[in-house]
Length: 286
Image (cartoon, rainbow, N blue to C red; front, side, top):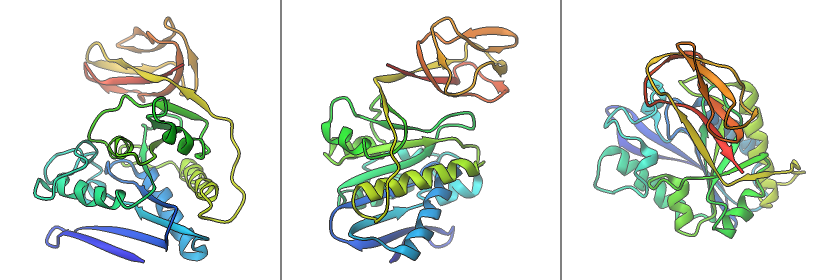
């Protein structure tokens, strides 16, 4: 079943919601909250094509593949109608700005489900990982253990994000980051994410089949390396690289940048002109 949430017929702001099956367990899968993160959108569209053919064995799958359709059109992270980041305003506001109203509609769908999984892109130069409040919420840890992605990182718990608000509302929830961004998708990781989602649904006994097995590593958080000035950034290491505090991860105008952390490099900026205060790299911490 396909439904449409219509916010504005003039600008074409219609959000499609796909629903397969009935009953428990139920899961909400969202993508495209940030309009420039296309890899995750395509993975969810691939899953929709799969479910169109195979359906579900039991339970309910609700998918919203493009939460921010105007952002997708313009390759912009935020909603171009009000310049707000939709993933900072959950649970939303029925009478608020357009972004708050979108969040409100999605939130009320989330409240009807047993699980919530939000799909994002962690940058063009990154590796897949799960972000969740796994340390203090047993039900989250049980949920993330079913997602066949190797690295699970403790979130900083920034409020207003769909998976954070759902977790605090006692709904097992997480966010997946895969390579992509700036409106660019990476086919390899469209398939990786699709297979991970299919395996998750098998482990939840929503789909038939054999789930992918993987050994997970849990991290206690992440650190960010920040640009100390404007200039031309060049990375010296690749995502997945294990680093220590003194590892030189890149340079700005040929001035070396040390990581300052010990851990696993999750993402690093591509070569570009970078501004002071920008995030250069994210490092998962044990």
